[in-house]
Image 1 (cartoon, rainbow, N blue to C red):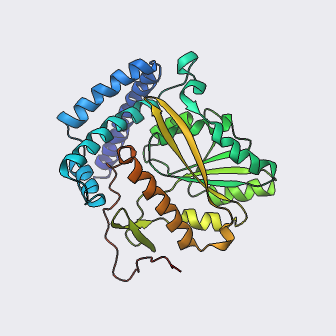
Image 2 (cartoon, one colour):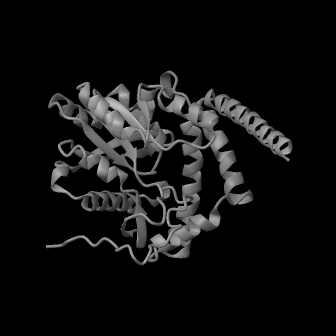
Image 3 (cartoon, one colour):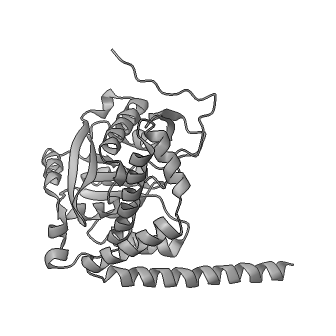
Amino acid sequence: MVIYLTSYFKLMSRIQNISSAYGIWLLKLISKLSFSCLFLLSDTLFFFLYYIFRYRKKVVWNNLKNSFPEKSDDQLKKISRKFYKNLCDTFVESVSRFGKGKNSVEQRMDLTEIEELNRYFDKGKSVFLLSTHFGNWEWVKVFPMQAQHKTLLVYNPQRNLKYDAYINQLRSEYGADLVSTKRIYKKLLACKEAQELTLTLLVADQTPKKNSKFWCVFLNQETAYFPGPGKLVLKHPNDPVFFYYMEKTARGKYKVRIELLIENPADFTNEELLYAYSQRVEKLVRENPEYYLWSHRRWKHQRPANIPLYQPITN
């Protein structure tokens, strides 16, 4: 039996390695395409995902229906269709490689608002940037081209180590330091000891376990949040917190939008910080719902009865 199980796991591992190698080869092939070709591929993917495979259509519909009860079914269907088109665009853009001319970073990304962060660098301050899965969240990798801070890109490792290594290679190609969520506390401490000013980027809307201690109303639904982003910021109470997102100005073109969320984190509790972030994300999603990641099972858990729903204090 032991010999049989050993052989089985070796076979499974070999199959996974072969599929990973093929998948990475395919991604590398896609990355060599021009943006015009990438968008032809995106249109093809959209047709199959939306009409043939109907990828997570029930999840998307339920999420939209519960988030926007005031909208008609026709309105929700239009948002859903636009979402799938944007999802396919985001995928091909995420694995693309910038080139020259109209395919260059300068032609595809407007990074001028990063200058606001550089002013804090001149003041000798590190900063935190919080965002959400909106638009093309992967192109944040180009921030080091404009930012003076040491750029730390916080991520959750994937189970498939080969895919994880390849995707992280893409994310770090412009100079960002990839730091896992488990290592970010120590990394920031090391940077502080080395007197390095840091720009810490977090996409902070992943779904935590159902026993999460922080729940609030987000898009008309009780929603859980990881406490980590708030705790991380409060360990550095003098570092301001910004909110950023990618504004889609045309197909394959974005403008980085950056705004101050919290100037002095020391004046906030962890719950107040997370709630402020949640409210800013909701405002963004309501303005352009088609760019949010609706296929994510954001509301798969229900709040346990022993965990209170956060209620902001109003004057």
